[in-house]
Image (cartoon, rainbow, N blue to C red; front, top):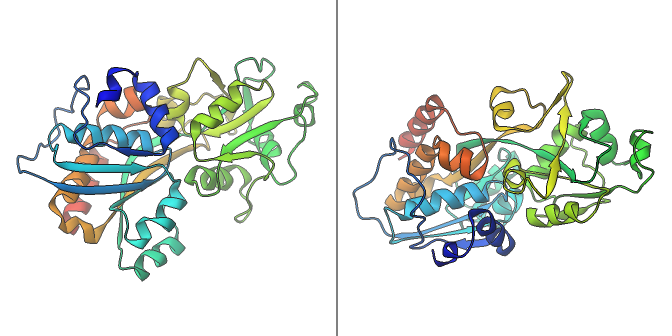
Length: 327
């Protein structure tokens, strides 16, 4: 890809997150190492693959799609960052995309919408994320936060000032940045932090599907707070600060190890893509689905490059068996 001659991987992801649309036909990254255990299809493949959905899964799917191009340059892959809900409602369940990325499981209402349009979704687990709470680098009064404090900042009766949450914190207005309500990140955050029978957090915040906007907002405001997928913090560690979260057993920083061993509670979560079972009849779609599962254990791509916890070999075996049963 020509752009990668000029941009670092971090800027590359930020650029395409801004655009919200990525076409990777013929695009390759020659410096990335392939997983040596990955099966390489020798069959000539061609066709189009359309993907929409989660902004959290977007950088991971982008990396996988690029790698797939090294073997199959005649397959055109287009990826849109629309949010998990937007991907299902506006594209996948209407039969307009082959895959739908999601940072939370598909809802029953979305399954019903899919069925009504002749689409049968099949779930593929890609990785594990540590949803991250971020503040300004100069927010020297806070390094960790309890779930109760986090809830008081984000619930419907949200605290107006930092001092309303903790008297030792500044008597300054809290500015909030977070995911739009079409996002799986929004759904997951509400479920584990607000957690009151489907209640959602305050509307007094700046919602967006563009994670770079959240990062820029936090970076430019000493008294701001926000939440996003770990990958976006992982790729911007010098511009924002991640808070440790106390889920009941003391403060734990968002790290790959903490997400993997389950200590980062309650903000660790699985990440998915859903493929249309009907589309698996197309050889290039089936091969890409298999490839995504196999690459989900690739430490360099999933962990080192993007910033998520890779799948285990046991998970891959299970996922491949379920996919092959459909194919």
